[in-house]
Image 1 (cartoon, rainbow, N blue to C red):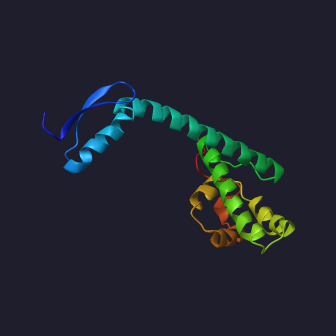
Image 2 (cartoon, rainbow, N blue to C red):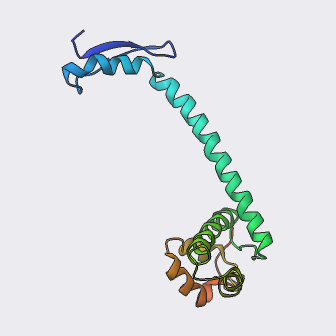
Image 3 (cartoon, rainbow, N blue to C red):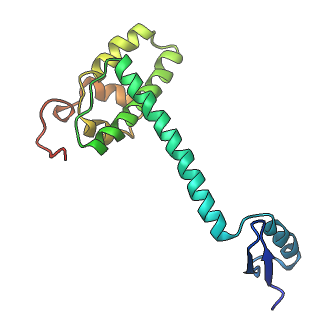
Length: 163
């Protein structure tokens, strides 16, 4: 073996020959020592995917529950579209409204009553999931303007296939 190829025994017990030629010669020993404290590539992939997936899934479920609770408490319409669109749009609308609330109410330019009358009353008219998805990149001031004039695609019957 060359000096750049080093056998590493990982914390999981697996061994691999690793090519450390990309590291300067003086850094190879400390890098190999650091690698030995980690899981091998395969073990890392297996556990990190599972752990990250479970963590991300839990976060998404909590956010969805908060969005559903907000929809109910704020008397917002159930969004129309495919199940996937409706779910995505529900989370999108929740995050957008949270941003508007933080900017205007917590920022001090609106009271809670004004927010309900000037923002939520407009939001209650928009029942198309597609509208929220299409406008998800809008900043708070753009969103407020779009809520005032949402266009025909925001509510009512649609000619798009919801399935």
